[in-house]
Image (tube, rainbow, N blue to C red; front, side, top):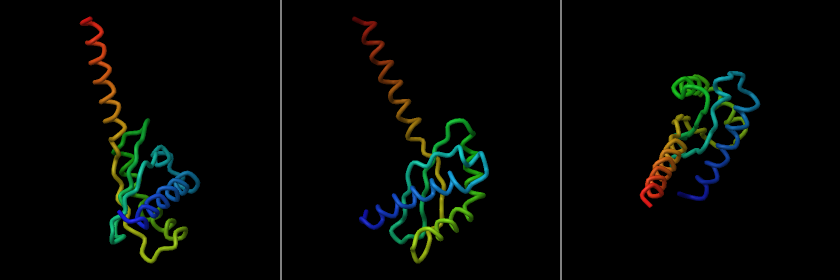
Amino acid sequence: MSVKIERLNNLFLAELSKIIFKEIKNPIIKTANLTAVEITNDLSFAKVYFTCMDEDKDKVLEELNNAKGFLRTKLADVIEIRHTPELVFVYDNSIEYGMNIERIIKNIHEKDEGNK
């Protein structure tokens, strides 16, 4: 990945987070925590990864998709780029995956302690 794309990924993540925090009125969208952005090399798409703790992830995804045009327009106002990529929202299950791994390791350690 080029340095330019990596810089844009970080910039998009920061600016999208600000827009959601400051300008979005929908309380369901405000529960989304953006974790990463991956922009394609041709700058046509930007995958925006998110997690949410309290809300149903499908409902949050639906509301983010409904606000996609607004978010893209606000990004275009803030970031000086010829073409603002199309936003694609994806639920980030890496936190759940990590918690599952920790639970498995803990169970293994507990079984080892029980066998001693």
